[in-house]
Image (cartoon, rainbow, N blue to C red; front, side, top):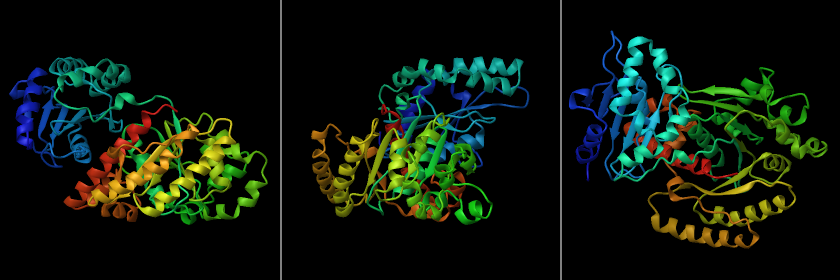
Length: 453
Protein backbone atom coordinates (compact mmCIF):
# COMPACT_ATOMS: atom_id res chain seq x y z
CA UNK A 1 0.00 0.00 0.00
CA UNK A 2 2.05 2.93 -1.26
CA UNK A 3 -0.59 5.48 -2.24
CA UNK A 4 -4.04 6.72 -1.33
CA UNK A 5 -5.82 4.76 -4.06
CA UNK A 6 -4.43 1.47 -2.79
CA UNK A 7 -5.43 2.36 0.77
CA UNK A 8 -8.95 3.12 -0.39
CA UNK A 9 -9.20 -0.16 -2.33
CA UNK A 10 -7.63 -2.45 0.25
CA UNK A 11 -8.80 -0.87 3.52
CA UNK A 12 -11.65 1.62 3.19
CA UNK A 13 -13.91 -0.08 0.61
CA UNK A 14 -13.76 -3.47 2.42
CA UNK A 15 -14.43 -1.65 5.68
CA UNK A 16 -17.53 0.08 4.29
CA UNK A 17 -18.72 -3.28 2.99
CA UNK A 18 -18.08 -4.87 6.40
CA UNK A 19 -20.14 -2.12 8.00
CA UNK A 20 -23.04 -3.00 5.69
CA UNK A 21 -22.92 -0.15 3.16
CA UNK A 22 -23.58 -0.65 -0.53
CA UNK A 23 -21.83 1.50 -3.11
CA UNK A 24 -25.03 3.50 -3.66
CA UNK A 25 -25.04 4.58 -0.02
CA UNK A 26 -21.84 6.58 -0.01
CA UNK A 27 -20.17 9.08 -2.31
CA UNK A 28 -16.55 9.07 -3.41
CA UNK A 29 -14.92 12.50 -3.79
CA UNK A 30 -18.14 14.51 -3.24
CA UNK A 31 -17.95 18.26 -3.83
CA UNK A 32 -17.97 20.39 -0.67
CA UNK A 33 -17.25 24.09 -0.50
CA UNK A 34 -14.06 23.18 1.38
CA UNK A 35 -12.87 20.67 -1.24
CA UNK A 36 -13.29 17.00 -2.05
CA UNK A 37 -13.21 14.52 0.86
CA UNK A 38 -12.54 10.92 -0.11
CA UNK A 39 -15.84 9.40 1.10
CA UNK A 40 -19.14 10.69 2.47
CA UNK A 41 -21.87 8.50 4.01
CA UNK A 42 -25.26 10.24 4.27
CA UNK A 43 -28.47 9.33 6.11
CA UNK A 44 -31.40 8.55 3.78
CA UNK A 45 -33.21 11.72 2.81
CA UNK A 46 -36.03 12.59 5.21
CA UNK A 47 -38.20 15.36 3.80
CA UNK A 48 -35.76 17.93 2.47
CA UNK A 49 -33.08 17.51 5.13
CA UNK A 50 -30.52 14.73 4.73
CA UNK A 51 -27.95 14.26 7.50
CA UNK A 52 -24.34 13.69 6.52
CA UNK A 53 -23.12 10.94 8.82
CA UNK A 54 -19.50 10.06 8.16
CA UNK A 55 -16.60 11.60 6.23
CA UNK A 56 -13.51 9.50 5.53
CA UNK A 57 -10.26 11.16 4.54
CA UNK A 58 -7.40 8.94 3.33
CA UNK A 59 -3.72 9.88 3.38
CA UNK A 60 -0.75 8.12 1.85
CA UNK A 61 0.90 5.47 4.05
CA UNK A 62 4.07 7.56 4.08
CA UNK A 63 2.19 10.25 6.02
CA UNK A 64 3.35 9.21 9.46
CA UNK A 65 2.83 10.59 11.99
CA UNK A 66 -0.70 10.76 10.64
CA UNK A 67 -1.57 14.30 9.55
CA UNK A 68 -4.60 16.01 8.05
CA UNK A 69 -6.86 16.52 11.06
CA UNK A 70 -7.44 20.21 10.28
CA UNK A 71 -8.54 19.39 6.75
CA UNK A 72 -10.91 16.69 8.02
CA UNK A 73 -12.35 19.07 10.59
CA UNK A 74 -13.05 21.61 7.85
CA UNK A 75 -14.86 18.96 5.81
CA UNK A 76 -16.91 17.85 8.81
CA UNK A 77 -17.97 21.38 9.67
CA UNK A 78 -18.80 22.21 6.04
CA UNK A 79 -20.93 19.04 5.68
CA UNK A 80 -22.33 19.13 9.26
CA UNK A 81 -21.16 15.52 9.49
CA UNK A 82 -21.37 13.64 12.77
CA UNK A 83 -18.24 11.50 12.44
CA UNK A 84 -14.90 11.79 10.67
CA UNK A 85 -12.32 9.07 10.09
CA UNK A 86 -8.72 9.89 9.17
CA UNK A 87 -6.37 7.09 8.13
CA UNK A 88 -3.23 6.34 6.16
CA UNK A 89 -3.87 2.58 6.02
CA UNK A 90 -1.74 1.90 9.10
CA UNK A 91 -2.98 4.41 11.67
CA UNK A 92 -6.32 6.07 12.26
CA UNK A 93 -8.01 8.83 14.21
CA UNK A 94 -11.74 9.17 14.78
CA UNK A 95 -13.55 12.49 15.30
CA UNK A 96 -17.05 13.36 16.46
CA UNK A 97 -19.10 16.53 16.41
CA UNK A 98 -22.63 17.46 17.33
CA UNK A 99 -23.73 19.04 14.02
CA UNK A 100 -26.04 21.52 15.77
CA UNK A 101 -24.05 23.02 18.61
CA UNK A 102 -21.29 21.00 20.30
CA UNK A 103 -17.63 21.57 19.41
CA UNK A 104 -15.67 19.14 17.31
CA UNK A 105 -13.63 16.72 19.36
CA UNK A 106 -11.73 13.48 19.21
CA UNK A 107 -13.57 10.53 20.68
CA UNK A 108 -12.59 7.22 22.15
CA UNK A 109 -13.54 4.57 19.59
CA UNK A 110 -16.99 4.06 18.16
CA UNK A 111 -17.14 1.28 15.59
CA UNK A 112 -20.76 0.50 16.42
CA UNK A 113 -21.72 4.10 15.77
CA UNK A 114 -20.38 4.01 12.22
CA UNK A 115 -22.12 0.97 10.75
CA UNK A 116 -25.27 0.92 8.62
CA UNK A 117 -27.45 -0.64 11.33
CA UNK A 118 -26.80 2.29 13.64
CA UNK A 119 -27.37 4.72 10.78
CA UNK A 120 -30.79 3.13 10.10
CA UNK A 121 -31.77 3.39 13.77
CA UNK A 122 -30.89 7.07 13.72
CA UNK A 123 -32.85 7.49 10.51
CA UNK A 124 -35.98 6.13 12.24
CA UNK A 125 -35.49 8.63 15.05
CA UNK A 126 -35.27 11.40 12.48
CA UNK A 127 -38.45 10.14 10.76
CA UNK A 128 -40.53 10.52 13.89
CA UNK A 129 -38.82 13.53 15.41
CA UNK A 130 -36.56 16.47 14.70
CA UNK A 131 -32.88 16.81 14.03
CA UNK A 132 -32.54 17.98 17.64
CA UNK A 133 -33.81 14.63 18.87
CA UNK A 134 -31.34 12.84 16.64
CA UNK A 135 -28.46 14.83 18.06
CA UNK A 136 -29.72 14.18 21.59
CA UNK A 137 -29.71 10.46 20.80
CA UNK A 138 -26.13 10.72 19.57
CA UNK A 139 -24.91 12.56 22.64
CA UNK A 140 -26.95 10.73 25.30
CA UNK A 141 -24.64 8.74 27.60
CA UNK A 142 -21.99 9.41 25.02
CA UNK A 143 -18.96 8.22 26.96
CA UNK A 144 -20.62 4.96 27.94
CA UNK A 145 -21.39 4.24 24.27
CA UNK A 146 -17.82 4.98 23.25
CA UNK A 147 -16.43 2.65 25.90
CA UNK A 148 -18.78 -0.14 24.77
CA UNK A 149 -17.55 0.07 21.19
CA UNK A 150 -13.95 0.84 22.02
CA UNK A 151 -12.69 -2.59 20.93
CA UNK A 152 -14.89 -2.69 17.85
CA UNK A 153 -12.96 -0.23 15.72
CA UNK A 154 -9.65 -1.86 16.55
CA UNK A 155 -11.15 -5.20 15.43
CA UNK A 156 -12.38 -3.73 12.15
CA UNK A 157 -8.97 -2.14 11.68
CA UNK A 158 -7.08 -5.32 12.59
CA UNK A 159 -4.42 -4.44 10.01
CA UNK A 160 -3.88 -0.97 11.45
CA UNK A 161 -2.03 0.35 14.45
CA UNK A 162 -4.02 2.69 16.66
CA UNK A 163 -2.60 6.19 16.73
CA UNK A 164 -5.49 7.78 18.61
CA UNK A 165 -5.38 6.11 22.00
CA UNK A 166 -8.04 8.35 23.47
CA UNK A 167 -9.20 5.44 25.62
CA UNK A 168 -6.33 6.36 27.94
CA UNK A 169 -7.91 9.71 28.76
CA UNK A 170 -8.39 10.22 32.48
CA UNK A 171 -11.61 11.76 33.66
CA UNK A 172 -9.93 13.57 36.59
CA UNK A 173 -8.65 17.10 36.07
CA UNK A 174 -4.97 18.02 35.88
CA UNK A 175 -3.07 21.16 36.82
CA UNK A 176 0.28 21.30 35.00
CA UNK A 177 3.04 23.89 35.24
CA UNK A 178 5.10 24.17 32.03
CA UNK A 179 8.51 25.16 33.30
CA UNK A 180 12.15 25.60 32.34
CA UNK A 181 14.68 27.92 33.93
CA UNK A 182 16.26 28.41 30.50
CA UNK A 183 14.51 31.00 28.36
CA UNK A 184 14.08 30.75 24.60
CA UNK A 185 12.94 27.12 24.49
CA UNK A 186 9.42 27.95 23.26
CA UNK A 187 7.74 27.35 26.61
CA UNK A 188 4.90 29.83 26.15
CA UNK A 189 4.14 28.83 22.56
CA UNK A 190 4.04 25.20 23.65
CA UNK A 191 1.68 26.05 26.53
CA UNK A 192 -0.76 27.92 24.29
CA UNK A 193 -0.92 25.25 21.61
CA UNK A 194 -0.99 22.36 24.05
CA UNK A 195 -4.00 24.02 25.64
CA UNK A 196 -5.57 24.36 22.20
CA UNK A 197 -4.91 20.66 21.54
CA UNK A 198 -6.78 19.71 24.70
CA UNK A 199 -9.62 22.09 23.79
CA UNK A 200 -9.92 20.63 20.28
CA UNK A 201 -10.47 17.24 21.93
CA UNK A 202 -13.45 18.55 23.88
CA UNK A 203 -11.60 19.36 27.11
CA UNK A 204 -12.39 22.42 29.22
CA UNK A 205 -9.09 24.29 29.37
CA UNK A 206 -7.78 27.14 31.52
CA UNK A 207 -4.44 28.83 30.83
CA UNK A 208 -2.83 30.83 33.64
CA UNK A 209 -0.15 33.39 32.75
CA UNK A 210 1.95 34.04 35.84
CA UNK A 211 4.88 35.60 33.98
CA UNK A 212 5.32 39.42 34.09
CA UNK A 213 6.38 39.32 30.42
CA UNK A 214 2.75 38.40 29.61
CA UNK A 215 3.71 36.49 26.47
CA UNK A 216 0.98 33.89 26.91
CA UNK A 217 -1.56 36.67 27.41
CA UNK A 218 -0.47 38.52 24.27
CA UNK A 219 -0.16 35.28 22.30
CA UNK A 220 -3.81 34.59 23.00
CA UNK A 221 -4.80 38.01 21.67
CA UNK A 222 -5.23 39.84 24.98
CA UNK A 223 -3.47 43.20 25.34
CA UNK A 224 -2.55 43.73 29.04
CA UNK A 225 -2.78 47.50 28.60
CA UNK A 226 -5.86 47.88 26.38
CA UNK A 227 -7.92 44.86 27.42
CA UNK A 228 -6.99 44.73 31.11
CA UNK A 229 -5.60 47.96 32.53
CA UNK A 230 -7.63 50.47 30.48
CA UNK A 231 -10.80 48.44 31.00
CA UNK A 232 -10.29 48.38 34.75
CA UNK A 233 -10.32 44.56 34.77
CA UNK A 234 -8.42 42.22 37.06
CA UNK A 235 -5.45 39.96 36.30
CA UNK A 236 -3.17 37.42 37.97
CA UNK A 237 -1.83 40.03 40.43
CA UNK A 238 -5.31 40.58 41.86
CA UNK A 239 -5.88 36.82 42.10
CA UNK A 240 -2.67 36.35 44.09
CA UNK A 241 -2.84 39.39 46.38
CA UNK A 242 -6.53 40.21 46.85
CA UNK A 243 -8.23 37.70 49.19
CA UNK A 244 -11.73 38.47 47.88
CA UNK A 245 -10.84 38.10 44.20
CA UNK A 246 -11.92 34.69 42.92
CA UNK A 247 -10.83 32.74 39.87
CA UNK A 248 -14.03 33.70 38.05
CA UNK A 249 -13.15 37.38 38.47
CA UNK A 250 -9.98 37.09 36.40
CA UNK A 251 -10.91 34.60 33.66
CA UNK A 252 -11.05 35.95 30.09
CA UNK A 253 -12.67 33.91 27.33
CA UNK A 254 -11.05 33.77 23.90
CA UNK A 255 -12.67 32.16 20.88
CA UNK A 256 -11.36 31.47 17.40
CA UNK A 257 -14.43 30.12 15.64
CA UNK A 258 -14.12 26.43 16.38
CA UNK A 259 -11.91 26.83 19.44
CA UNK A 260 -12.32 28.30 22.93
CA UNK A 261 -9.78 28.85 25.70
CA UNK A 262 -10.18 30.49 29.10
CA UNK A 263 -7.20 32.57 30.22
CA UNK A 264 -6.04 34.31 33.39
CA UNK A 265 -3.91 37.17 31.99
CA UNK A 266 -0.68 38.58 33.38
CA UNK A 267 0.51 42.18 33.54
CA UNK A 268 3.99 43.74 33.68
CA UNK A 269 3.17 45.08 37.16
CA UNK A 270 3.61 41.53 38.48
CA UNK A 271 7.38 42.13 38.21
CA UNK A 272 7.17 44.73 41.00
CA UNK A 273 5.11 42.55 43.34
CA UNK A 274 7.82 40.11 44.47
CA UNK A 275 8.40 41.90 47.83
CA UNK A 276 4.65 42.03 48.48
CA UNK A 277 4.26 38.37 47.60
CA UNK A 278 7.16 37.39 49.87
CA UNK A 279 5.57 39.33 52.72
CA UNK A 280 2.14 37.72 52.33
CA UNK A 281 1.36 34.96 54.81
CA UNK A 282 1.14 31.50 53.23
CA UNK A 283 1.29 33.02 49.75
CA UNK A 284 2.77 29.85 48.30
CA UNK A 285 -0.62 28.16 48.64
CA UNK A 286 -2.80 31.04 47.46
CA UNK A 287 -3.17 29.82 43.88
CA UNK A 288 -3.77 26.27 45.05
CA UNK A 289 -6.62 27.49 47.26
CA UNK A 290 -8.19 29.60 44.55
CA UNK A 291 -8.03 26.75 42.05
CA UNK A 292 -10.01 24.48 44.35
CA UNK A 293 -13.14 23.24 42.54
CA UNK A 294 -12.01 25.11 39.41
CA UNK A 295 -14.28 23.14 37.05
CA UNK A 296 -11.72 22.60 34.24
CA UNK A 297 -10.37 19.37 32.80
CA UNK A 298 -6.93 20.87 32.18
CA UNK A 299 -5.19 23.86 33.77
CA UNK A 300 -1.83 24.89 32.28
CA UNK A 301 0.34 27.40 34.16
CA UNK A 302 3.03 29.43 32.39
CA UNK A 303 5.56 30.89 34.89
CA UNK A 304 8.66 32.98 34.09
CA UNK A 305 12.00 31.30 33.21
CA UNK A 306 13.40 31.79 36.71
CA UNK A 307 13.15 30.45 40.25
CA UNK A 308 11.24 33.12 42.15
CA UNK A 309 8.21 33.39 44.36
CA UNK A 310 5.66 33.09 41.52
CA UNK A 311 7.32 29.85 40.42
CA UNK A 312 6.93 28.38 43.89
CA UNK A 313 3.29 29.48 43.85
CA UNK A 314 2.73 27.78 40.49
CA UNK A 315 4.45 24.55 41.51
CA UNK A 316 2.57 24.41 44.81
CA UNK A 317 -0.72 24.52 42.90
CA UNK A 318 0.27 21.86 40.35
CA UNK A 319 -0.22 18.13 40.02
CA UNK A 320 2.58 17.81 37.47
CA UNK A 321 5.47 19.64 35.81
CA UNK A 322 6.21 19.51 32.09
CA UNK A 323 9.75 20.57 31.12
CA UNK A 324 10.18 21.83 27.54
CA UNK A 325 13.66 21.75 26.05
CA UNK A 326 15.38 22.11 22.71
CA UNK A 327 17.84 19.56 21.33
CA UNK A 328 20.72 22.01 21.60
CA UNK A 329 23.76 22.26 23.93
CA UNK A 330 22.74 25.17 26.17
CA UNK A 331 19.13 24.09 26.81
CA UNK A 332 20.32 20.53 27.53
CA UNK A 333 22.90 21.78 30.02
CA UNK A 334 20.18 23.79 31.75
CA UNK A 335 18.07 20.66 32.27
CA UNK A 336 20.39 19.34 34.99
CA UNK A 337 19.97 22.55 36.97
CA UNK A 338 16.19 22.55 36.43
CA UNK A 339 15.88 18.97 37.68
CA UNK A 340 18.05 19.68 40.71
CA UNK A 341 15.99 22.72 41.68
CA UNK A 342 12.71 20.87 41.16
CA UNK A 343 13.96 18.10 43.42
CA UNK A 344 14.94 20.62 46.09
CA UNK A 345 11.54 22.32 45.93
CA UNK A 346 9.74 18.98 45.96
CA UNK A 347 11.57 17.89 49.11
CA UNK A 348 10.15 20.94 50.86
CA UNK A 349 6.57 20.21 49.77
CA UNK A 350 4.07 17.86 51.35
CA UNK A 351 2.57 16.78 48.01
CA UNK A 352 5.06 17.82 45.33
CA UNK A 353 4.04 17.88 41.66
CA UNK A 354 5.09 14.88 39.59
CA UNK A 355 7.69 15.47 36.85
CA UNK A 356 5.79 14.46 33.71
CA UNK A 357 8.81 14.46 31.46
CA UNK A 358 10.92 16.49 29.10
CA UNK A 359 9.00 17.69 26.05
CA UNK A 360 11.29 18.19 23.07
CA UNK A 361 10.37 21.49 21.47
CA UNK A 362 11.54 23.46 18.43
CA UNK A 363 13.68 20.65 17.03
CA UNK A 364 15.08 20.64 13.50
CA UNK A 365 13.58 17.82 11.42
CA UNK A 366 16.45 18.01 8.92
CA UNK A 367 19.26 17.21 11.37
CA UNK A 368 18.42 13.68 12.50
CA UNK A 369 22.04 12.76 13.32
CA UNK A 370 22.51 15.87 15.48
CA UNK A 371 19.14 15.27 17.12
CA UNK A 372 20.19 11.74 18.06
CA UNK A 373 23.46 13.02 19.51
CA UNK A 374 21.68 15.66 21.59
CA UNK A 375 19.11 13.12 22.76
CA UNK A 376 21.89 10.86 24.04
CA UNK A 377 23.40 13.76 25.99
CA UNK A 378 19.97 14.53 27.43
CA UNK A 379 19.53 10.89 28.41
CA UNK A 380 22.80 10.96 30.36
CA UNK A 381 21.62 13.98 32.32
CA UNK A 382 18.26 12.38 33.00
CA UNK A 383 19.92 9.16 34.21
CA UNK A 384 21.65 11.14 36.95
CA UNK A 385 18.25 11.81 38.53
CA UNK A 386 17.18 8.16 38.56
CA UNK A 387 18.78 7.46 41.96
CA UNK A 388 16.50 10.05 43.59
CA UNK A 389 13.38 8.10 42.75
CA UNK A 390 12.18 10.96 40.54
CA UNK A 391 13.39 9.76 37.14
CA UNK A 392 12.21 12.15 34.45
CA UNK A 393 11.47 10.58 31.06
CA UNK A 394 12.08 12.12 27.67
CA UNK A 395 8.66 12.11 26.02
CA UNK A 396 8.09 9.89 22.93
CA UNK A 397 9.25 11.24 19.57
CA UNK A 398 5.64 11.33 18.34
CA UNK A 399 5.12 14.22 20.79
CA UNK A 400 8.16 16.25 19.70
CA UNK A 401 7.33 19.71 18.32
CA UNK A 402 9.22 20.71 15.19
CA UNK A 403 10.63 24.18 14.61
CA UNK A 404 8.58 25.30 11.60
CA UNK A 405 8.14 28.81 10.19
CA UNK A 406 4.35 28.54 10.33
CA UNK A 407 4.55 28.74 14.12
CA UNK A 408 5.88 32.28 13.74
CA UNK A 409 2.89 33.13 11.58
CA UNK A 410 0.55 31.89 14.29
CA UNK A 411 2.40 34.00 16.86
CA UNK A 412 2.15 37.03 14.57
CA UNK A 413 -1.63 36.57 14.26
CA UNK A 414 -1.88 35.93 18.03
CA UNK A 415 -3.74 32.66 17.53
CA UNK A 416 -3.11 28.99 18.33
CA UNK A 417 -2.24 26.83 15.34
CA UNK A 418 -5.57 25.02 15.88
CA UNK A 419 -7.51 28.16 14.89
CA UNK A 420 -9.53 27.61 11.72
CA UNK A 421 -9.37 31.33 10.94
CA UNK A 422 -5.57 31.10 10.90
CA UNK A 423 -5.71 27.98 8.73
CA UNK A 424 -7.77 29.78 6.08
CA UNK A 425 -5.14 32.52 5.74
CA UNK A 426 -2.26 30.18 5.00
CA UNK A 427 -0.76 28.76 1.83
CA UNK A 428 -1.01 25.07 1.03
CA UNK A 429 2.55 24.46 2.19
CA UNK A 430 1.89 26.25 5.48
CA UNK A 431 -1.30 24.22 5.94
CA UNK A 432 0.69 21.01 5.63
CA UNK A 433 3.08 22.32 8.29
CA UNK A 434 0.13 23.20 10.52
CA UNK A 435 -1.28 19.68 10.13
CA UNK A 436 2.08 18.20 11.10
CA UNK A 437 2.34 20.39 14.21
CA UNK A 438 -1.26 19.74 15.20
CA UNK A 439 -0.65 16.00 15.12
CA UNK A 440 2.38 16.42 17.39
CA UNK A 441 0.48 18.59 19.88
CA UNK A 442 -2.45 16.15 19.89
CA UNK A 443 -0.03 13.30 20.58
CA UNK A 444 1.45 15.31 23.44
CA UNK A 445 -2.01 16.00 24.86
CA UNK A 446 -2.96 12.32 24.64
CA UNK A 447 0.29 11.28 26.30
CA UNK A 448 -0.23 13.67 29.21
CA UNK A 449 -3.86 12.58 29.57
CA UNK A 450 -2.73 8.98 29.91
CA UNK A 451 -0.56 9.79 32.92
CA UNK A 452 -1.94 9.18 36.41
CA UNK A 453 -1.33 12.24 38.56
